[in-house]
Image (cartoon, rainbow, N blue to C red; front, side, top):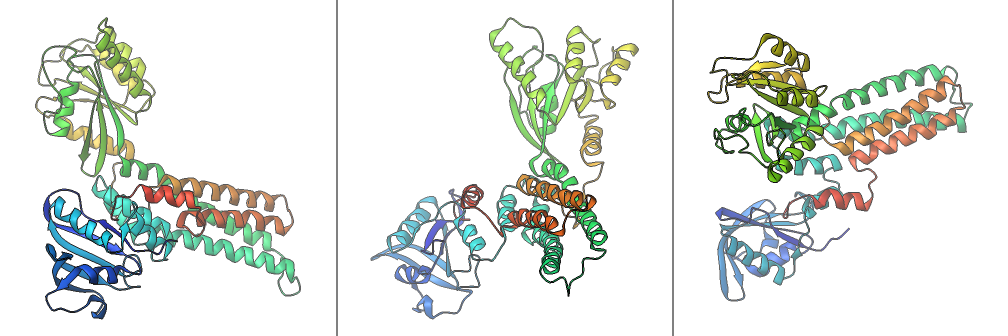
Length: 459
């Protein structure tokens, strides 16, 4: 682990009210004392921890800025190292000059996520808490934010730690019984262990059952709007976004390329893609747009299939209906503000494609509330809560939980086959170690580098 002093601009590189330059390391206070001249003329090393001091940052004889310096001494800081935070004016140039001065006098530029990495390596937080930091920064909706804060407070850590304690207790008993059979009896132990494994499996399965929902709530629902040209796809996108994101005209085929937008619907994020109208065309540019629309359909979590209800269904409508059949699709009968010309048998055919068929008017916004309700029902059983229930939102956690479950199933299989007790220990320990990867009890350097490289500079 590197213990030299690192520094970075911790606020956004844009003009703002204030900016923060952060330092951490053994020489952070010493570096600060070289460039900070306090109004009270006291040296920072002689000041109490968690105090704020007013003065100037100096580069030789030149005043760089008027600042407030926050002092946090080890181990009571984010990194558990001596930490200095310089609060300056929020201009890009002045922040860069202060960072250059800090580096000139002994610090080095920090790598992305290096402050949080040091907090992890110094034992202040576990790996799940470190990952939750970047999740908080990248939160797209209220649920993602609250879930990330819950994990930052240790929700995942405490659950995984509890599972590991139960596993290691049984492993230790088996090892003791094998080494000292006179004092540790294994009579009837198979039944006991079988019950323990069964309960552990239930707990892990409950966590895994939340993973798909957690991924959707954290990352959003990959949503594709499809339909033939001029049915109101772009108008639907605009009403969902709340602005004129896509060009809307009476001319068919206005949208020729893919338009992507992110929409927050009362806590659920839709990553919406508005596609070119699917139809036969000789126009090269339109054809490329249609081909892309078909590609996006294959990987969509949700398809919004828009039909013009003011016209009878055409061959193109039927063709698209066959393409979306068997997928998660909501059929939107658009232009409900006009008289419907969709015949009864055509409507019955549409209802066979999806049980979710609603009348909307993208022009007036009618029916959009019902669309939101259906999305809730389809993906969240109509219920989004912000309670203390632990939801797995990280694919890495999900993979290790699945591996641990497989190891416990092998233990269960060994019990059923009445294998020797030391067989149990091997798979129990594998489950124990696999769960340890989640919280960082054992972590390879390349994995740590991959996780922390995703962080922004200064965090």
